[in-house]
Length: 142
Image (cartoon, rainbow, N blue to C red; front, top):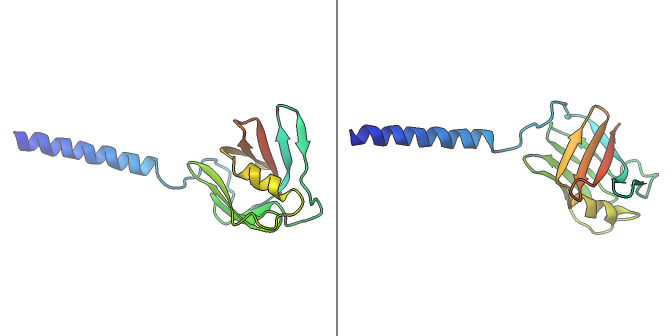
């Protein structure tokens, strides 16, 4: 009798463990919008407290502050001079290769990306929120 109870208990533990691993691991697509192959360009940083919208310099740089999704959850691009990686996993993350040599408002961008905690996406816009949701980086689909 003890063996059957122990076997049943072990099976329940394994099932619970499998459920946790399957449902809470990896990089799953959170939004139903397909991002693979799409390119996004920063329009600016919006501050909900001050209602200010800041466009980052250099404005004339086509490749600055942009990235392209190679999957629905990962993208590669650049700041003003450095490589950028975007990861839309359980915890959203924007990683920058290095902070050396940023020009214009590149350091403002780097500082904001380090604080990102969540995102939202629509067919036209992608927002990365920081400062407890009071500010966001606004990207427009190209």
